Each structure stands twice: as C-alpha cells, then as structure tokens.
Amino acid sequence: MTPNVASEAVGYSLENIPITYRRIVEEIADVTSLPRDAVEHRVWMEALQLGWNVGRDVKRFGATPHEFDSRMERSFIFETLVFWATPFRQQWIFQALDRIHHHACARGVSASEMRILLLGDGAGNDSFFFARNGFSVDYFDVPGSATYNFAVSRFRRQGFLGKEIRVLGAYEDCLSGGYDAVVSFEVLEHLPDAPAAIRDMAAALSAGGIALVTESFSYCLPSFPTHLRSNVRFAGRTPFLFLSNGLRLGWYSRAPLFRPMEFVKVDRSRLRDSFALVMDKNVFRTWRVHRLRELRRVLRSGKGGR
Image (cartoon, rainbow, N blue to C red):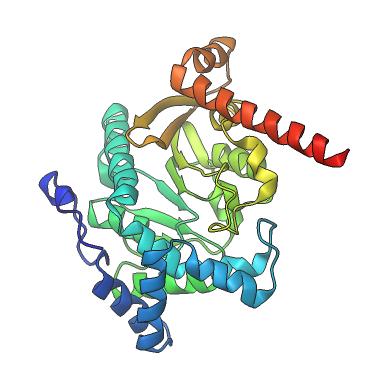
C-alpha cells in the first residue's frame, strides 16, 4: 500500500490520513489497546485478503454469514482503513469532494457554509478528508461500537472533534432536513432495511440537496459475510429505489462506474425521471444483468427443489 501520488497533483490533501502499511499499523496501535504485533498481522492479512478480519470475527462470534447481527458492527476498523488506502477507494471520495464543490458553486455558497453528513463513515477517513480540504462535517456511525469509538478518538487526537468534525450521538440527529449533502459509501448492503435508510437520506436533505452513495448489493460473497443476502434483490435497482423516495439520479461516476452516484432531492418525482433512468444505457444494462441473474437463481432453486 503506497500513497496515491496522483491525488497530490490535483490538489487534494491527505495530510495525516494513514495510507501506507506502516501508518495504518501505527494509527490502530496508538488508538486501541491492541498489541502492535497483533495489529501488524491483522493489517497485513487484510491487505492480502480484503474482509479477512470481518470473516474471522464472524467465526469468533458464531454469527451466520450474510444475515444481520448487531455484534458485527464492531468489526470494521481494519477493513475500512486498509480499503481506504487503495487508489480505487480514494477515487470515490475525490469525486465526491468535486461534486460537493460543484454543488456549493451552484448554490452560490462557500465550502465552509455547506452542511455535510457523513453517514456510516466507520473509522472516519472520509470525515478527515473533507475536514482537511476545507469543509466542516457531521459524522455518524453506530454509537458505542468499537469503530465509532475508534473514530471519535482519532478526531480528538488530531484536534478536529467539535470543530471541523461534529459527532452525532443519535440517529435521529441525522434526520434534520437541513443538510446540503449526505455522503454514504458502502453502507446500504449491510442494513436490514435498506429502503428505510434511503428514505432517511431524503429526510436528512434540504430541498435540492444531494446524496453521494455507493453500494454493493450484489457482492454477497464469502469474503464479505456482513453483506446481507436479503439485499441482493436490490442489485441494479438503486437509482429506482432512490427515485421512489424523491431522490433523482443527477450524475454518476463513469470510472469507476456508479462509484459514486449522486441523487438530488426533488419536490416530487415525475414520469420523465423514470423514463430517463430506463433510457440511460448504463442504468438499464445494469438493471437487466441483475434481473437475468435473479431469474437464473430462481430457476436453479426450482430445479433443486424437485
């Protein structure tokens, strides 16, 4: 794992965000009570196989893979920090920052005036990134979880807590309706009621606000045991789910595709919005691929039952 040198060329600050093996190990060892040799081993194994730590905890807790278990909310420190260090993951947040700058310009306000919610930010790197690049944000993750406590400790140690980064203590605090932007990466596939979470994003936003989202509904794989099997049915349907909750697809990344997607809060969805989704070849192709996969699964299960 090495720094994404391309990020510096376009002016993004990654100051004090751990993106090398050594720095990730130091960050976890300094903030937690884990022995350094154990941290080194777990970071290394995570770098070799993404999801290694969560998979180990699934076995340790006796949880059932791909079924919701609140105990697994404590298992994401290693996975999120190691994954964030990859240029692939960093590209998502670079594009999100660009889109929020664009949104601020469209609204005629400065970056510091934007109200931004980082929903499900885990270990807190996205919050750090926005704070390092001129924004103030609200952070929310599961209060009391090991990941939440880890992030809060990091914010405090670097002097951001209560200043550039405000930590919300209750989920209801997210639903103010006053945010200009909500950023939520790789959260929905973990939730037992993803449609309700999408409704809540709409409730969190002010009129014309944007939600920047990635999801992995289709990645119900052994290496991702906390991705819920019950959410596979939503694969390929994300733009339609958001539209049904008053959030219209306004933009999406082409490289990587749909990571992230940007949804705009509208007063009401219109028929032309649904038509636009169907006519978008990337959206329609993705929807069709997953519906064919779903049909094949149904056919296979039917044959197995006879």
